[in-house]
Length: 271
DNA sequence: AAGTGGACCTGCTAGC
DNA sequence: TGCTAGCAGGTCCACT
Image (cartoon, rainbow, N blue to C red; front, side, top):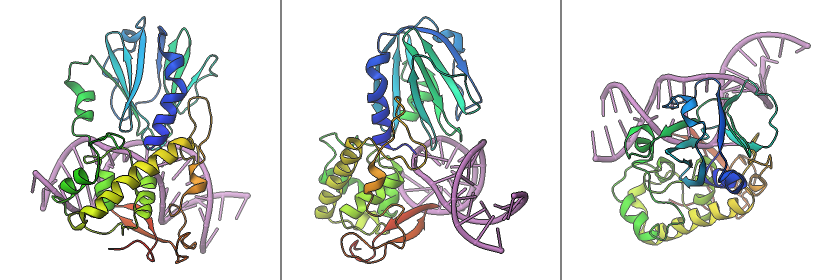
């Protein structure tokens, strides 16, 4: 579910309200992808600081460290003054004097990991090796071109891998490749410098546009206010197999790459 | 080193 | 109506 726009929309929807709050209790549900890494009670009494984002991870700063959060495929966060009783998919509650931050995640691919901020441990390991932020000025055609030269995987997979640039998941990788008119099956090393310029711009613009629209709500995404996103209504190729391409009216195709669905237009996305 | 496939887990939908 | 197979926004890890 959550790619960079959804994660950022989520962050923006509660960061200001939780900053400065004091943790009063913690409730954990079923296990998530990784163990919390500390006793829940160790979080109590700590004051919450800034909430920042790196790729699809959120970092919730606390006085003696912080929590690294990931929403996996089906996770969402809600921040509310008077939360209802925890349901069977509510696996983490950070109760504060300003409200409760709750992670709901049916599939439990998400995670909440404590880190003392030492630069080692699980959280550091997860963050190590992430590529550039798409809005980092260093992420440009030259950078993309240099990184792709060394790869033999399909360009779609290179975007998803997250070690060159972070943030684009299955929806936005498909959409960005459509905007750049590049065939998702094209081997990374074969992208010209000019096409890398186009693709870098397309990644940035696609993610920025989705962000402005509040992300995509395919089935259940909500920000921490419970608001749905609107980008999915504007997708050009994702989920549109068999429908006419908005640019050339050829039939949008669905293929499978690395066990993930890829949507593209065989008419205007070129090798 | 880089690429590939499997693994994790649950819910929903389409089709029989 | 009811069961089942297939699919879903992510990404780590073991193996080649």
